[in-house]
Amino acid sequence: MAIQRTLSIIKPDATRRNLTGAINALIEEAGLRIVAQRRAQLSQKEAETFYAVHKERPFFQSLVGFMTSGPVVLQVLEGEDAIAKYREVMGATDPSKAAEGTIRKQFAESIEANSAHGSDSEENAAVEIAYFFRGSEIVG
Ligand code: ATP
Ligand code: MG
Image (cartoon, rainbow, N blue to C red):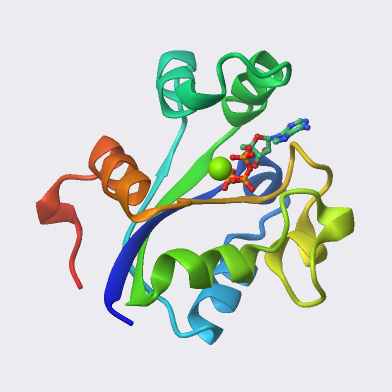
């Protein structure tokens, strides 16, 4: 397996409850390295563009509202098989289906307010990382 990078977002439900450090601990315990990190308030336009693939889904407007409801922490994670590994660390989208020990099992409030985002493919990881970070901000 190759070293990969993936985009992580610690979502507003988690920053509101002061869980950035707790989530970062789970990331690092899994062997992933946080090679870029920035706290940000997403604008409506940024959230709509980021989630454009979901624009026909019934939850789109609600999701954009949620993602702009407070600060997020944007991160680039690096490691062996990082994309799939971080999806495992996050757990299932619906926290009631997430495995024990995962971020979403421990911290998510609902299927929408589910504490973390992680890229789902190499192609999307590259697009999502470039959307939020310049190369010089990622230091591996
Ligand atoms: P993410 O893209 O955030 O890593 P994911 O890939 O597990 O999560 P997606 O299907 O890509 O899930 O959905 C993107 C996000 O939209 C979810 O993380 C969640 O916040 C929200 N979402 C997904 N399904 C629903 C739903 N049925 N109702 C409300 N919100 C939803
Ligand atoms: Mg997704």
